[in-house]
Length: 145
Image (cartoon, rainbow, N blue to C red; front, top):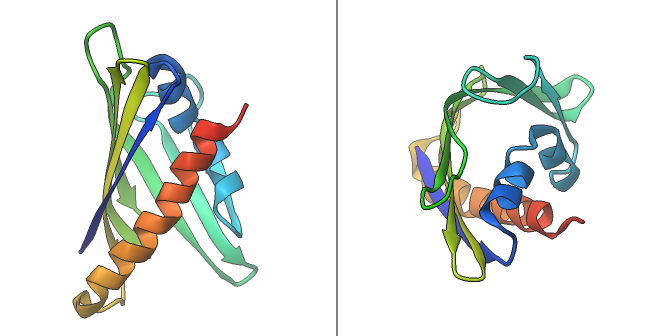
């Protein structure tokens, strides 16, 4: 299993940071060859399911996810979201925390990826690549107007 963590600080208020990070379809704008479809009706929360389809034509796979914990930030309390990955190719989980800090908010995105068929000897490589990809996603989501 490859575990990685991305931490960012932003001048955005915690509520806006949370909104941007949990706009699941917006994630696809920062991951090449990926589109995201939400499978459950709004509003988002525990039980929300979505799928990230990555690849081209027959050379694509689905990363199916479900929100299993949903606690938006509130005054004095961090927001926390936990996703479980339930696809045939990618398993694992992701935990997103948004905490109010002086001058904005702090994001912590921790994830465990278990891509099927990838030897555990490559966990460090998978974690390094994932940290770069998800760091770019978080940066892009926080930067958009």
